[in-house]
Amino acid sequence: MSDNIITSGWDVLDASHEALRQAVGGVPAGGWSLPTPCAGWSVAHVLQHAAGDQIGFAAALTGEPGPSFDPFAPSGVIDGDPRALLEDALARSARAWAGVDREAAAVPTPVPPHKLTPWSGSAACALDAGVHAWDIALACGGPSPLTPELARPLLKVAREIVEPLRAWGAYAPELAPLPGDDDVAALLRYLGRDPLWAPAS
Image (cartoon, rainbow, N blue to C red; front, side, top):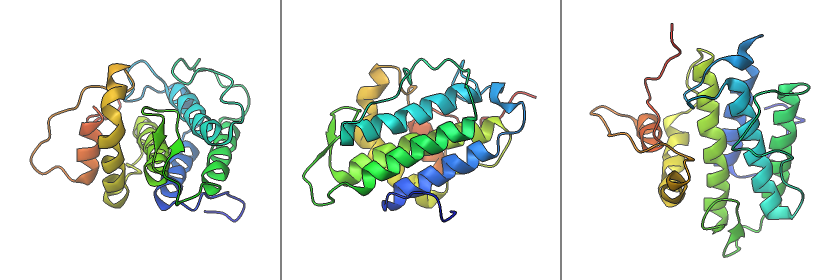
């Protein structure tokens, strides 16, 4: 990571932020309209959603304004530089999490139950960034940015928070595990994503 990038000090979150940053950095010219594993959403839709969610986590922690748009109804049209949109969101998120008291009993979050331990809250924020990094990277024909080392803590927090979110349509139904699944595949299937997804040829 370059020297001017703000980090949160939470390893899982910083790794997920970097995965999302790298995935967005790999979007080719004209790639913002490519379809993603999120049905009906282009790369631009997913980026808007991911950026909005990071701002939402920051707002829950700090009381600052949340995103100026609904992350669950993104327009798919980005005014200005998409990468600047992401960097602003990641910086706001990282600054907010850097200020969290690690010994606190709970911190506010935008996802149910709206209060989590500091580790779980930061990992929930990381889960959002990490899985959307995967969506964007795969949509553009790139390699998965998720590693087994990152997937393991993300799956741990996913099992804490995802079930209530499925009822709202935030995640698809869990896919059945298959023999030979690694940690990344286990995470993706739990989130309703096919680890073998690829753009239509």
